[in-house]
Amino acid sequence: MRRYGGRVRIRLFDPAANPRFDDLPWSIPLARWDHPRLVDLPAGLHRNVVRFVEYDGQFYALKELPLRLARREFRLLRTMNEGGLPVVAAVALVDRRGDDSAVLITRFLHDAVPFRHVFRERTDLDVVEVLIESMATLLARLHTAGFYWGDCSLSNALFRRDDAHLTGYALDTETGELHEQISDGQRSADLDGAIVNIAGGLADLAAAGELPDGLDPFEVAPRVGEAYTAIWNELHGESTYDAAAPADLTRRLARLHDLGFGVREAVITQSDEPGLFVFRPAEITDGHHRSELHRLTGILARENQARRLLEHIERHRAATEDRLGRIVPLELAAHQWLSEVFDPVIASVPPGAVSILERPQLLLDVLEVHGEAAAPTDDLLRTADRVIADVIARRRTVEAR
Image (spheres, rainbow, N blue to C red):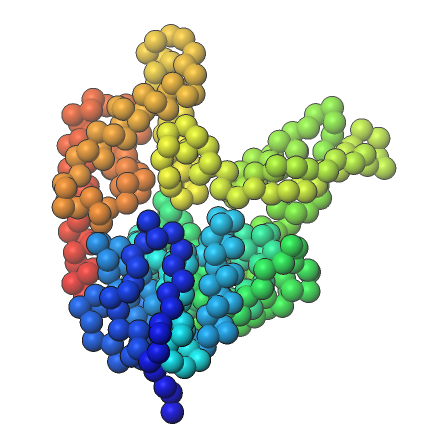
C-alpha cells in the first residue's frame, strides 16, 4: 500500500518568476486531488497521472511518477531548457511525500495542443503533411543537440501553430539521454521507434474516425523517416561546390536557413577534382530567423513566424526605399515597421484578450487578410479589428467544446 505524508520538499527553479506551489495538497495522491487551482486543459495520453493548475493566468502541468525517474527528468529538462531545446520548461520537483513518488512540474505551453486536437482545430492545414514535417524537424533538432529520446511518439509531443507550419515540442522525456554527440545507431533506433509509435497514434485516430479518409497510418508514418533523413543530410551531410562559381554553396546555406538553421562553423576541404571543394557543416545553430527577428525588433517568435515577419520587414523596407528614393538600412526599416505596423496592431487588442492572443501569429493573420500592399494605418487597424474579433470568437468556440 502506498504511504503518503511527511515533510514535503519543493525544489523550485527561479522563485522570482514561478509560484511556490506550497498551497497544494502534496500529501494526497495526485489522482485524488480536489483543489480550486485545478483546471481542465487538453492533454495527450500519458502513462502517469497528469493534472493542471493555474496561478495568475499561467498554467502548469503536474506529472506524478517514480522518484528516480522524476529526479532524472527534472535534471534533464533543466539542462535542455538552458540549451534552448524544444522541450517543455521544468520549474519544480516535489518529493519527500512519504513514499517513492515525486511530482514534476512543467510550465504549460500556451497555444500548444496534443496531436488529436490538431486534426480537430487546424482545418486550414494539410494536417498530415504538416505533422510529418513537424515530427521530422523536432527529432532532427533533438538529435543535433545530442538528445536520444527513446520514446518519440505523437502522444509525447505538443504542437504550436507557427505560421502555416507546426512547431513540435517534446513532452515526456523520462526515457531520454543527453550526450555530447548522438551516434548513428542511436539515431536509427530512435527513428525506427518513432515510426512505429507514430503509425500507432495515427491508427488510433483512424479507429476513432478522426483521420482523413484514404490515409493509411502505416503508409504515412514511414514518410516521417524519409523527411528526417532529408533534413539530417542537409544539416550534416557533405556537398561540393565550384570555388570559381559557388552558387551550389549559396543554395546549400539558403536551404539550411529555410529549415531554420544556421552554420556557425564549417569544414571546407579540397576535392580530388580540380577547382572543387567539399563543404561540411561542423556546428549548427538553431533558430536562424528567430535570432534575426529578435536582434532587429526584440520580438520573440517561433521560427516560421519569424521568417514571415522578416519578409514583411523587407517588403516594408523596399516600399520605403521606393518612396524616399534612397537606400534604407535594415535596422532603420525594422524600427519603422515596428512603430507603423506591429505596435499599432498589437495596441488595438482589447485588454481582456491580450493574454489569449499570440502577438506574432495575430499580426501574420492580420497581414494575410489585409494583403501585402502598403496601406494607410487606419485601413490596417480596421482589418485588425475584424481579425481580432474573429480569432477571439473561434477561441471561445474551441474552449466551449
